[in-house]
Length: 333
Ligand code: LMR
Image 1: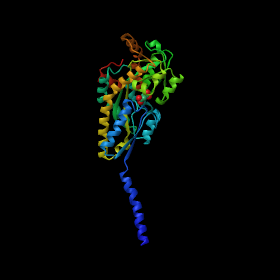
Image 2: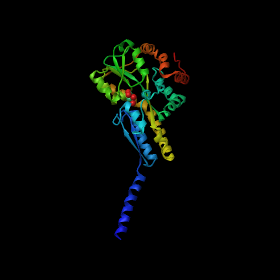
Image 3: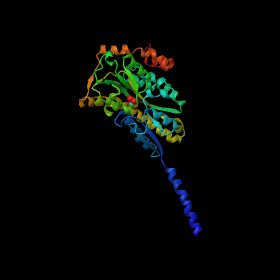
Image 4: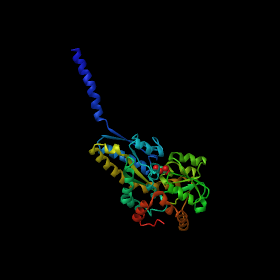
């Protein structure tokens, strides 16, 4: 009898953990570097809400905002290793993988407006660029918008000469490196999480970013002058570890794809207004002066930055430039 009881108890010990295991949700860690209260931050939380709803709790999304899990450079490496499953880096950050073509999107004054940008990414360019990631074990799921860059420093930036000798933080793109150099300034790549302190302590004099990032990272508190220049565009690629993604049960993957599509529509819909609201808040705080370019100023910037286009060929290659030129109907030199 004792033997039998012992056997039953032992069997139930074996059975319970297995049953518990079968119900354990699939966990997706989604890491990013910005605040929750930004287009990307809100997009990640929307994806979490929808993914958990559509999969009926079979998938749990853990969102890690504000570089709380990984900083810029580390996060893509971690994705390849499978330590994190989902990221949304800006497309300026793929060069360390040996993929330079995404940097074509950083060309100054490339997208005429939000609509031109959005049509381009939904079309051939977006798909073509995502194919480049596959060989690196990364699958691109969506592009998320964050609008146009402003630029700032401790003095007003109105003419190309105003940039002379100033050190600017850039996020990684050599195209940005080039256009800042053409303005006579000294660009420096730095992780996003380090920018506030670098501006505060004078390690760099200025930076470029969108209004929502200026507001939520408090850059506007340590920059006396911001020029609402909208000289380049900031966009994200939502990416996953390919092995993880293709290993998911097909029904779950389909539900997650639907959640991603819906979260993408939501993010791209709010991006413009989020940045407008952020700009209004920065203005209201009164800690910085906003400057706007006249048509003549803008023309002078465009002319000064223009050689980036011919320089880009040696950096990103002719193929992507041809593609962009065709899709956007722009001249590359
Ligand atoms: C940056 O590093 O400035 C941006 O990529 C941050 C972001 O993700 O918006």
